[in-house]
Image (cartoon, rainbow, N blue to C red; front, side):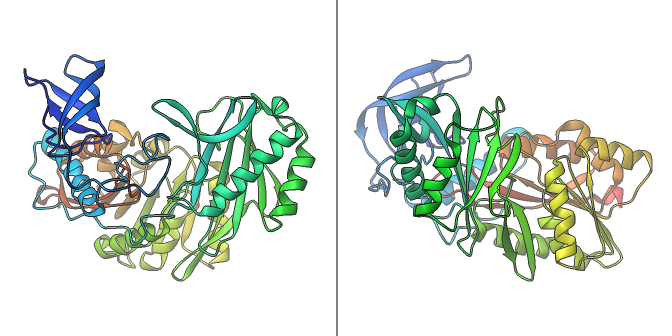
Amino acid sequence: MYIEKLVYGGYGLGRDSEGMIIFVENAYPGEIVDVILKKVKRDYSIGRVVRFRLRSTNRLKPECDHFKECGGCCWMDYPYEEQLKAKKEIVSEQFRRFLKLDPEPFIREVERSDVIFRYRNKLIFKAFFDNGEMNFGFVGNEGYTKISDCKVAPRIFSDIKNYVERILNAIDPEVFRGTVRNLGFRMNEEGDLAVLFVSRSERIPNEGEVFRLLLREFPDLQIVFVHNARSKSAFSGKVRVVRGDGYLIERMNWFEYMIPVESFFQVNKNITMKMLGKITEILCPSKREKLLDLYCGVGIFGIYFSPLFSKVVGVDLNERAIKFARANTKMNKVKNCVFLKDDAVNFLRKAVRKKEKFDKIILDPPRGGIGREGMELIAGLKPKRIIYISCNPSTLVRDLKILLEKGYEIVEVQPFDMFPHTYHVETVALLDRGEGMK
């Protein structure tokens, strides 16, 4: 089977003798491989390579000993320039396939990350019990993988993780089995560091001893405890600050932000700054205009762009994020920002009903997007310009289709490589009201 290209999910795309699409793990363009099928669907199958008849000359020796095992990076043995080309094609294909548009007039080259190793400011390890020991690692295709050092995160994360393993196993690994779920890390640009213990119970066994031994070795750590009995999202649950403030300070040019260590924040600071620059360039703000910031989190976008607008309204359902967004306005002495705790779609319903006016809208929804009703309500507000930030190209184009139906036009699509060595890509899409709406 000949591999034609890379696709979303990290697979190489090939076709069998009857033309059926096969998504192949660990296969790159130009390779000829023998494949065994793992999963068969009506329109496609998923397979893995059992023999290489022709290997790509582009393959590199990966930097990580756990590559292909941990389930994280999928392209670490592929040249970075080729990764960028593949990501642009992945985004372009969504516009061609689902919107029937030629993306070349509006899609830009992927903005590269200046740092492609040790770039993550956040990492979450999953706890598992193996051979009588507590371990923290990742879940790959073959199950749990213990990680000694994750190459896309700061080395200190793995050092502390390895030390926590030693503590738990020295005390009694059996008492932690089934209780400790995750071990998470967060670090800001200045190197301030927090570790998060996620547990199914309100406290972990021998908690005081665990934390005492950890702080003896790493005295500057913040420690935060998250009680999460069921949620798949590791940091969802009741938060208890054991030591420290429970937040880190991040600086974005002339603004400072308090960011709760368990809350959402982009994992690659280098790319985040590039995104802020790009959005500033394409937003075309005016001091006479009003900005709506949906899924605002702790107020990164709203506060950053506040000097350029008469008023900014930020909306997020996370109560703790809104609390910090309001605190961030005070810390930065921003007077024209209002942050509201509400579901984005529910807020939009009320805004349309009240005939509120927003000149520009920025939205940065979760991977699932905002959906049809949300997009129809946004169109109903008739903003001049919409900026949609997405980490999922398929839900991005699904949602943009609704705006196109309502008369909006795509002006520019800028992909960003937020996650080097993976198939994931962050995308900023700019839409204007079409001529018929102006």
